[in-house]
Image 1: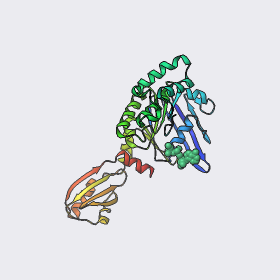
Image 2: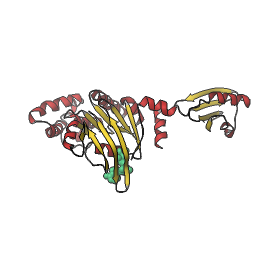
Image 3: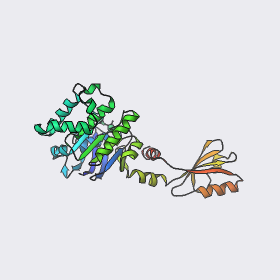
Image 4: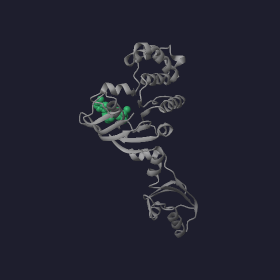
Length: 303
Ligand code: ADP
Ligand code: MG
């Protein structure tokens, strides 16, 4: 249950959508593939699933080379494409039966469809036309389709995009639950999604990987390097003066007598701020270290 990506590049005309990308996903991981629109997420997923070929590089899924053994790869991979393309005129059960017939012998279909409907919570909607379903149930149908052949690996392209907050939670829980027994790679441009379900995050920007860590460590290693301190003095100070604080790289007026001061990398400047205040006969009314949220780290890495 592993995915190996070796030096993959993809060009659309002259545009490089993926630029020499390499990474590995091991069995049991739930990996968030995170990046802004146009970063190359969908392109990577289409290449892994064998829908489009790369211009350079190799992809192995469970030791099968995708370009040589596309059929073997499709047997072990479940894929929910971006925008979840479905046949809107088909009934849920009928559609899943159709998808099942592409993968499994005829005699197993009925039971498999029944099981997958239950697993994905589609029981009450199973006799409706897909076009009549809410977006949340359409997404469940897309997931059911991806799971029908009980694949080891799930590739989900923006599985929660366009859902309302309740549906998002439901689908995330479902993915988390199913993901316990599978290897999952899901793309998203939402940071919280990664924090909610993934144990690893790969951040891509402009076709390149800019980070590959656990959600926790990315927050720690990236945000602790430079610190932002929110400080309130008892009176106004010139911002230029503040940027002279030892170890500070930037000062910005926030509001009233409050300033944001950013430190250089790996430098806790709080005592320097305090000394600066004493030297300039300022009183420090409050001082607080601002934790960077994963969201901010993401912005920093991809801007
Ligand atoms: P993401 O899924 O991260 O939003 P995509 O992989 O869809 O990014 O796209 C990466 C880049 O490649 C984008 O700039 C996009 O416009 C371009 N692109 C994607 N598919 C095609 C295509 N079929 N033809 C031309 N350009 C494409
Ligand atoms: Mg996409």
